[in-house]
Image (cartoon, rainbow, N blue to C red):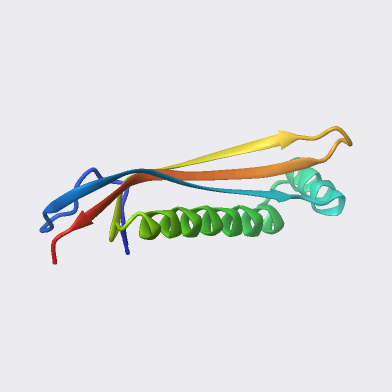
Length: 109
């Protein structure tokens, strides 16, 4: 499956449009990762735990979007947009949400 953030695929003709497709991933973080990320914010540096969580959530959201496109009969998704959000929950925790959306299309060749 071809996936791109652009509105067209160079060298490919779009034969049909199959609508908007989406994928979402929500991952919980844990208190230890939050604690160590807070320390890194103070002393500087990158938070490997959060980076891994974001990467995993992004890949999950994209794969869900691709599955939805395939089920619609598409062989490509164009105009992909990725959105990242943090969601606070009642017990003081944080959830990471990534959503991927695009337009499912069928391209020639």
